[in-house]
Length: 274
Image (cartoon, rainbow, N blue to C red):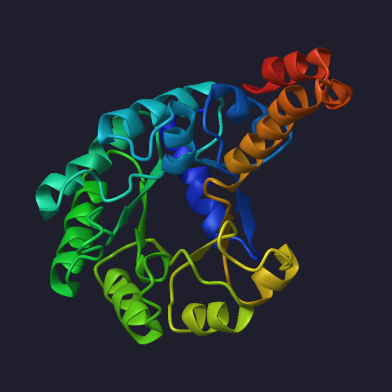
């Protein structure tokens, strides 16, 4: 078994080597083990995927941390925690989520400038930067190298202000964030513009980007880390709904032909820790 320090060092190495790497987003222990068995090198939690499995639109920080613990314990892979706004507005309170994630087994985690309030969805610039600074301090106080990701959420909330997004990412970078992230960027030219304005690794989430882009194209644009957010869980839900509709509307069960073989799944579960 790798120690948390070993996982942290491995995660940092992935951000330093040439090219881009994919960090898929499982939503429970089973999906984490399947991804590990397939050879992925790191995992990231998804708060959206977790919310969907609980049948809710939102999840609490405690639920996010518990999900992080479940996924971190499922495999030997480094885990990055999707911490949303870290459960608090004020910087010091939000920074506590970094410690909670580390205690749950994560070796990386994110803080975002989205408030969770639809009437005022993005934190004011100065407060957003203060929050990142506090999170950086919390990360640096840990006994291992925690990789902190800072997210600028403008594009997810209809604020397609590229200049402000870059300004925020640059400020987060200056505050000490290890990875920068702006979900909602779609086309390759916009992605290149953002990445070229930064010096530290950038995470692109494919749940909102042009799905025709390839890893090769994304890496050539300067992206270091590629995640998918809740996309895989939503795809699984789509398959679930197709099965349900076939039964309900047609009285048919042809979907059973496409089931994952139990033997293959159990073998993947058994090999995940290896």
